Image (cartoon, rainbow, N blue to C red; front, side, top):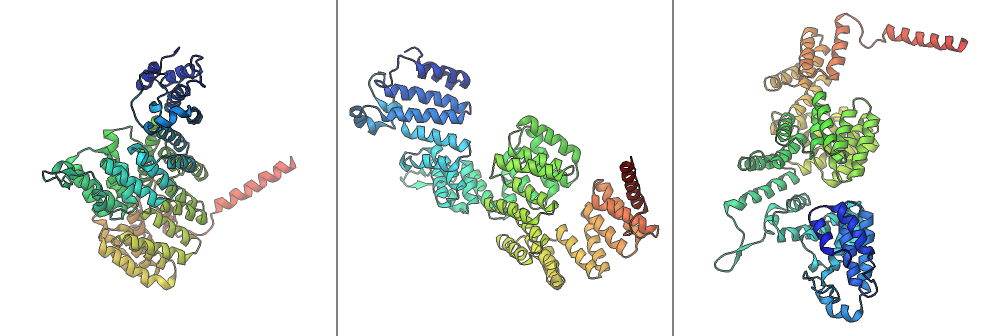
Length: 561
């Protein structure tokens, strides 16, 4: 043979895929291999070339090459194939290249490789067809995991669960299978029962309950808590794991993500920053971090984060969501195009849908925002998707739909003060429901006394109903523990409404000291200054009128010229 197969195999083993691909072209075109007399050799050579193309991410060419290999496999003389078909999946190669032993070709492996190419090209249904051609008993761990992902992506939940379970039976440390099963509703007990058992002296199989494996059980419990919206329980378990595995970036990221969802923004930012100090090249969940930096108006850090992410890997969906967050202040439509790009890259990336929904709300397109938040919810319902749905429905007066979404959140998270507040928000949207809203806000505060969002909403309700004193006393209680700009803005607004201008001024200034970019504080302060001068803040400004007149005059002059 002109080109020894061992050479291309060595290149593949050493990750020299481009050289392997170039050498493979010589291998498959060699005149010494006759396709009619040695179809098995031709098939083997094509598979090696396909492997090189796959590694080079030339997936279309790889698919074409693998399919050619299968065609040659099918024309192997019947007298040889019938006797050796049963050994198709064997791994031992024949020492003689002319023996027609086809054990070197594993048809199921080739189908798996074709499916993997389709999956990389986001051609889920075609990939699934290929994988379903592999008998379930012939699937290895890799095949089972791909099958699970394909079933999940095509919403065949029962099939996905079966395949994920099979992965854990083969290996308990397939972390993505643990996370997926938790998200699909499996209990911690059910997942742990799948782990391979260690036989004891009596011959009976028992799970290894030693301290060395207990951390994995705790990890399963933590993921199941998060998936069932028991955020508090999940965070406690992750904190316990962090004591055993200090500076574990995965656990820190999981904690930060949950803290961001439930509104513990300072803790989430601290954990994200800790991750970046340990490993500055992490991209996972960095779009969540970007959203928090924008919330805190820390644009210098946000700018640096986006710059760093672009230099690490500009093809990841997280990068485009982060770009969208950065761009929102300058151009909301431009930001929307970035977030749509992130969804195009990965249509299962939840922060992309959350960001898209929020942008559409800002652009006064609540009906489209509903679709975005629904997209997030179909992938995994969390507090933010429920909050987005409620806000979107209220924005175009679909009160019944908003109430249904809020109640769904309350059912999913019965111990969540945030869910109770959502129901209160819906009732507060009309004058007839304010008393109910008050009860829900008070219930939320009983459940979580430090929940500032519920306190601000209740204070707003007091102001609407003319109980300014109650609003002030409620908000002042939170000043001791919260250095929050929104709290100072709300107090300033209440004081301004009761003509207590010095107090209002003081709180607006406090808000701007905490967050110089707070737009509500800036506008409120501007309005307050007019009130203090005895000027009606709602009256049109003379300068604006003059500017319009000047513009008209300039237009007339242009026409005359």
